[in-house]
Image 1 (spheres, rainbow, N blue to C red):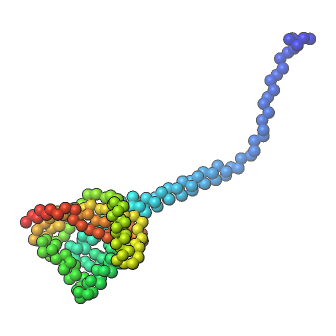
Image 2 (image 1 turned 120 degrees about the horizontal axis):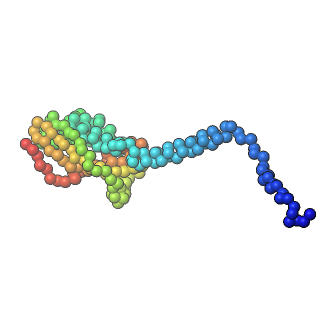
Image 3 (image 1 turned 30 degrees about the vertical axis):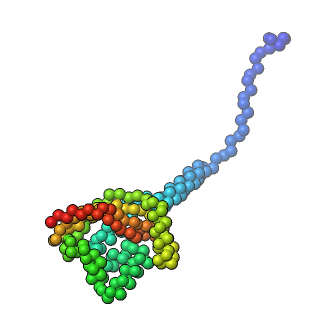
Length: 205
């Protein structure tokens, strides 16, 4: 029989390696491990955002509102509670040197406000901006703090907060644009500076 006339040989079946028996829990373990990794990454990102003041809504604004409300109510304890310890201690020392109660000290410190708006003045606040202050400004603050208090201040985040304070009382009312310098120190937001954004004052009688 010639080669040409030989019958076709059946194709050889591909040899396959025997499959290893799968652990029924292996897939579940892989999914669990992946989930844990994702949770760790998300938690780390949230911590970084929170530490830098990018989360927490208006957390950096709250001490500003408390600061202004404390002025209107002449609440000394509330006033110094939104400041770093060393700065608060200066106000406490000044009050003690003057032998004044907390309310008397606040009314003397903000006599112009109480005269202009009245003893019954109140305030509401509109926040108009939140930005990172210039690095030079931050460095100057750190250097001044070190010179005055002899130690560096721990700061994990810094913001400049712009606000319009709506003061009103029995004498008059006015909308005053202010800027605040707030820092996050020891896990809490504190006010370390406040100034007028503009010097124009249009008082409504």
